[in-house]
Image 1 (cartoon, helix red, strand yellow):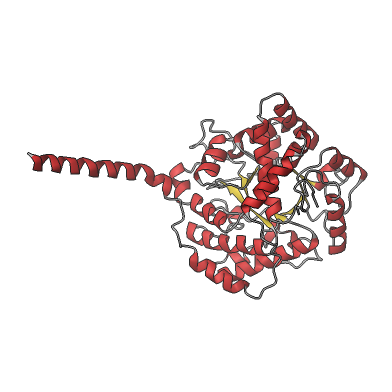
Image 2 (cartoon, helix red, strand yellow):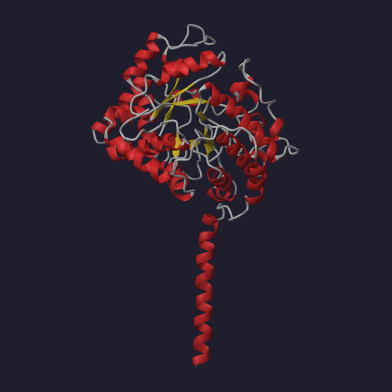
Length: 426
């Protein structure tokens, strides 16, 4: 009898363990096995030995956190809300022609930045002519900062149409659209290309790169796939690790985009809200592991997608950046990203023709986004978020947490240099 009971107990125990293991398998599978990136990191370390880089002095996460908290205590609500916006400079005073240039701050730009001292600005080839002019422009922009130095961002994918260096004659063109994405390209070369491009941008006054793409390319969207590092998770992961490390060593904060991925969507995601129909299991088995590796490599920010993820969200037409299920439950909690979560550019037609600026700004923050990227109208977006906090629709603690993440990253990156007194900004 005792023998029979022992057999029964052992059988039940095995079944329980099996059930528990199978229940967590899907959730855990995306996690990077410890040590799988060791070989890549060793190669990159060898590649960087002796190379000139823009690495800033290291500030520990704890020190950056504490300093950021002290700064926030001395910020007004208006300053904190403004810190959550990153705007395209030319939007503040558009030239008469769409292709027009703005190489210096205009009176209208100054007025807008003084009225709402944003957390960052984005410069394109329409604002960048040469090193001397760009440094002067950046200096003028930073002189208007309040509550912390600004991010000065570029989009530099180190190749192709989404490369600032490829559009500015005075910059070194880092290569053609697919040069470092070919199967024959080494991780070391990806690292060197990205570090070189980032180092030049840092020298010209930039401190944030809104790149690289961390998605897995598909044949259904070849145009977008040309911006990706490959069509399988392992290849993309290795090259993304090299790119993130190179950009970071070149002196720029790094942004992964566009979480949780565009998948096999067909069409122009900047013109319409498309639907990524991949299942949560597929995303966990592929995309999440890639993002986890990019984050482990040192990514500062993650930019959300403006595509819907209908098989995950309750509202199957809701873009990822407006979904708390995707922003908070998946990226923040499951993937474990503790840095700055960004919206996609909110001035794209896909967004502006479907939502008001007031709606997307408030709902993006409620979903868990920390930084609002290029709203269609800065004044309206800023006022909407400020009003939402004052009215109680958004708790001020939510704003404080987002601003702390932004300031913490700026302190770590030495974008915001703290003197002896925490409230003293340089």
